[in-house]
Length: 68
Image (cartoon, rainbow, N blue to C red; front, side, top):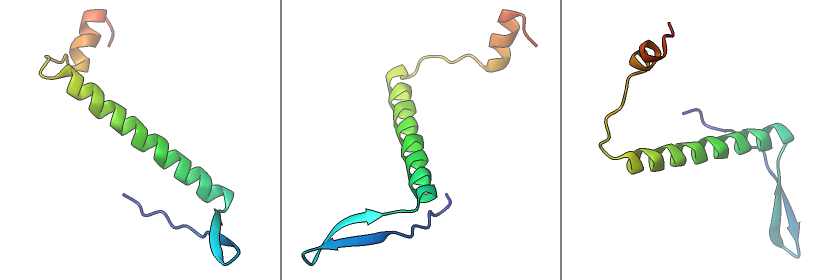
């Protein structure tokens, strides 16, 4: 996995760190990674729900549907 380099600017109020401001491209990269992580969690959840059900290979599905 590629490591994400962040360049935050930390905003301080009354001596306390309050906000981190990121370049927009870095924000988009984080947003995409979070969406990918969410997709992975959903996939794992679906696989657990399927349990040991028999799967059908894509080539067999295509054959059944008359696709090449």
